[in-house]
Amino acid sequence: MLLDGAELRDRLFELLQPYGLVIEWAAAGAQLPGSFWGEPEAGLAGNVLHVASDTPLHSALHEAAHFVCMSPARRAVLWRDAGGDHAEENAVCYLQILWADQLPGVGAQRLMQDMDAWGYSFRLGSTSRWFAEDATDARDWLQSRGIIDANGQPTGQSA
Image (cartoon, rainbow, N blue to C red):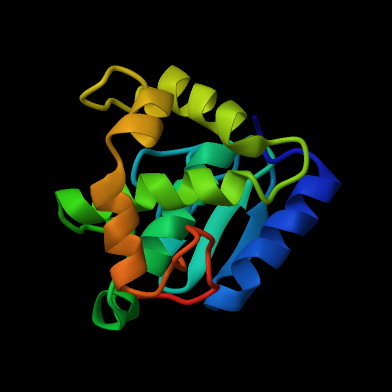
């Protein structure tokens, strides 16, 4: 799923606004500053998420989740490489799946299929199996930092 619909763009903006993340939209095929994987994958530069209409939604959500999960000190010098350890990477993947359920026409299942197609890999062989059966550590990580609440819902707070 690409970021090519106006309603999806508007909802993505609403979803990420509480975190202080600014979205910069570029034309399809344009160079995206801060892209770790290269275009059309999303880029991060400070508090700016760089995307285009041909950016995969999973990429935009993943980079945004990195921004939310990292420390303020890392956010202050952020350029391209979000860094973080294995536990944080799992938390990022978990958060992007939660966010997908808040976007019209997306949902967690669709996003997890896109993640699998892109090449995310998990111990159990698929994103959905990992999320359902093996992601307790990611959920705990997010809860311990106040990023999700006791019901597993995003709080709008960053680490």
